[in-house]
Image (cartoon, rainbow, N blue to C red; front, side, top):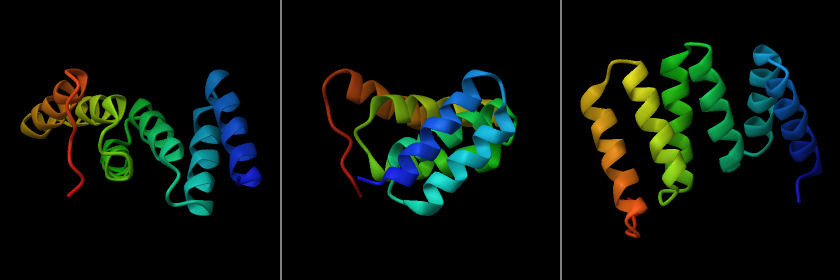
Length: 111
């Protein structure tokens, strides 16, 4: 258990809930610095970066999330949304296809 990381994550979630997006970004960044394998931190960081139109970095976080958890439906869906927001439609379609496979009970193999 990583208490410091988890405490920071809870604080960042609270910041996000009250609309303090920059504070949330700072908190989530610190979480993934402490634990680079923290899927929830990468996922949350990517989503809040997308909300603040920091799309290239959001996509990087989304890619890290699906690398850590290749069979997570919501991670692929979020990555698809990030690509759409950045105008990368072929990449968005590919990510959506992976989400669809997972939604139908299939698996996306880790490369």
